[in-house]
Length: 253
Image 1 (cartoon, rainbow, N blue to C red):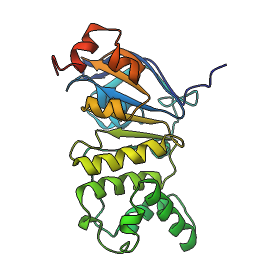
Image 2 (cartoon, rainbow, N blue to C red; image 1 turned 30 degrees about the vertical axis):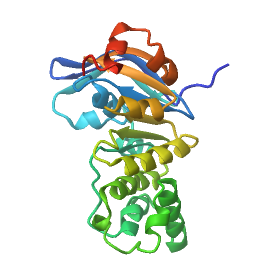
Image 3 (cartoon, rainbow, N blue to C red; image 1 turned 90 degrees about the vertical axis):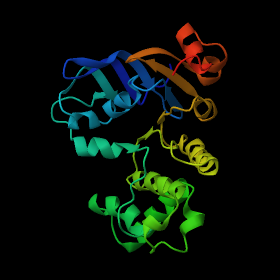
């Protein structure tokens, strides 16, 4: 018997007012994998991602039909603790937004709010999170300095570390490398490759080459619909749908 998916999306449609942003999506997020979501602007990629930790709840007029199951439990069921859900399903955004404090305090703030213990435990959390985000060796001697002094790529990995410090169960990455140079992008991708052993990762990217490099499966979205989802190597070499082939070969998008 195959292992149950970490997240199972069943017949999900999403609306802002009356306009459908997603239409009848069925998709699974499996343990130990990076799932890339590709498609042109306006295809519903980020809306889908934000459905997985209920960030769309904050948007005017949002409603949905269907289910999003995390370990078999509906995250939209009555009584779900949304703050706890967002710790379990952590998100890194396209634009890094470090808090106006030191590097160390950026990482420690969330665990402290969640009830983490004394200084020794906190130091271990900070170091582990920074190591997992491939940033520790670059900042270990300046943890007390302002996070705003870091480069853009370092700030993005700091934001990843900030999410990791809360020990999530799933990582959502919304175009995390869109503003980064190739070296910083490579470091983020190296971190993702290691982290997939601990966390299922859902990566929204407008860069098809990144999806080809940095995922085990890829889903192609178009105009709110899931056109197909395949093993990444298969999708990029032998897609099932002509619209997928047209997109990845640059005929539109």
